[in-house]
Image 1 (cartoon, rainbow, N blue to C red):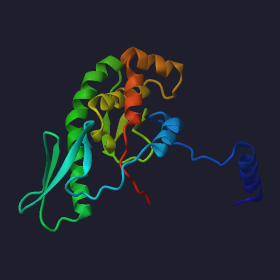
Image 2 (cartoon, helix red, strand yellow):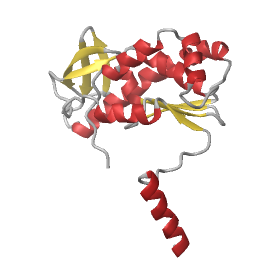
Image 3 (cartoon, one colour):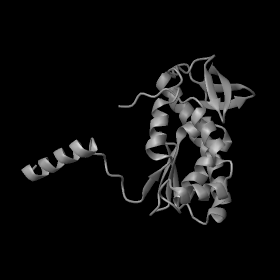
Length: 212
């Protein structure tokens, strides 16, 4: 690193604080720094051990987990207020966690396409591709240049109203990148109750996470 570059970095750090990572071109995310801080500070559940009696949320409803050990295909299903997990005798914590997360992905994959199809003609933007992944500090993100939208796996635990809010929010970002007055006006037009949905989403507990 040249002396001139070192001096420039020193000046930036002195005047502006730590140098921030430059986002990829076209990228946008829900609530940016404010939302990132909210998710970092949110109430989180204690670590899940995937044992009978634990509480798990499915579309905003608190369910009690019942682990059923038996031979055959491992799977998860909902029975009233119970979340039934069928696993072989030797299924450890990692196997059970992966099974539940795979099931949550399937739940989102069932609901997201219909929401995108519904909102594309209203918002007048097309989602060319969408993906689900675990995200520590965002409920969703998008790339305006490619039309690719990402959704947080945690949304499978939230009320379906919250998932729809994130779909609309990210699709509105395909029209307006920043959280400015124009963006708020778009959200007011498309989803007048978006603020209450946002507050409901941010008030619900998050899963305990440990990130490398």
